[in-house]
Length: 244
Image (cartoon, rainbow, N blue to C red; front, side, top):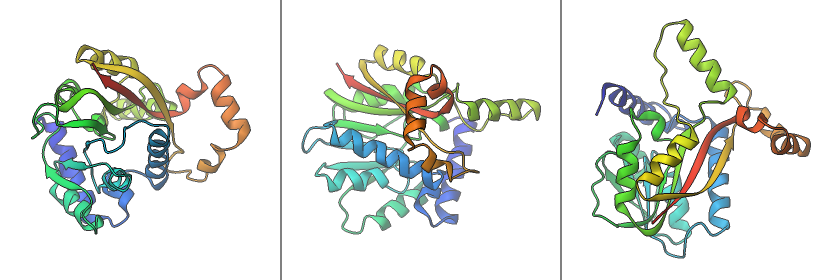
């Protein structure tokens, strides 16, 4: 584990011990978690997974997606390297519908082909490099298994402003950004064929009221029809890949 990754592990441990709201355990805004969960549920409603698919949430934090998947009948494991986060996940999962395991994304403690689905949301931005995590995801997936991998959008307006601010102050950036095309190429090289890309639109933390604006019909039309606007507005992309 690199120094950058140890810093993030320490941050997640502090988040889990200092904050009560579930979104803060993973460092999200309330809107960030809410809109991601809605996007994930929409994928499930459209048939992302077969009935009873064995699933892994890699970087489970407080276990939000573990509980969501378990309630839909999927045997699911949540993995995280932050023990305080795992304790929060276990405490929130009152009927113990999921299993929880301590581990690192670059060396998953599971046999080859252990799962039919892997969700990796909010993880790559806290890693020095993405290839080792994607290699492990490919290893633990069965053939035809599905992976949902999030990468922060390097071309988003807010991301560009953050990087510019860090450059001016001569400070390192606290997050890693990866272009969706580069992530897709890496996934494809590892046998994870990209079959879909979903942009995640979030309001700035400082202006949470904009969340409602994102649902206005004219905003939706603008995002869908004006070239480049959706790219500038998207905070992250979810890449959906299927193992060959």
